[in-house]
Length: 96
Image 1: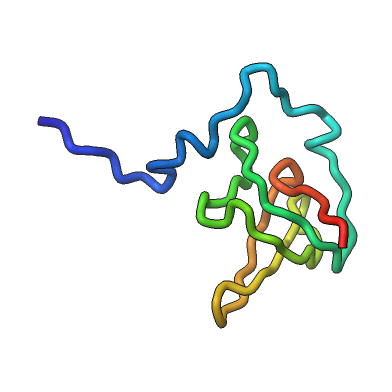
Image 2: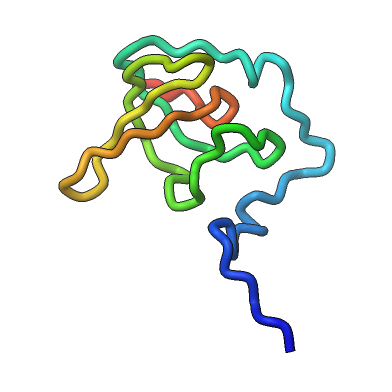
C-alpha cells in the first residue's frame, strides 16, 4: 500500500486554489515596494519562484530591501525575527 505524501506543501490545496478565471498580470509581477513599507504575504499559486511556505500566508511583514529581483522582508515570529526573500507577486501593499 502506498504511503501518504508528507511534502512541505501538504494540506495546502484549498489555500492555494484560485478562481479559474483569475490570472496573474504583469503588474502583479512588477510591483514596487519601498524600504520600511508594510506588506501582506499572500501566496500566488501560479508563481513558483520565491514562493513562501504556507505557514507565512497572511503575515504582515516589513520590506527591508531587495536581493536581485526579490524583496527581502522581515517579521517577528514569537521572539525571533525571521527574514524571507519573496517574489513581488506574493506581496500585497498594506495601507497604514
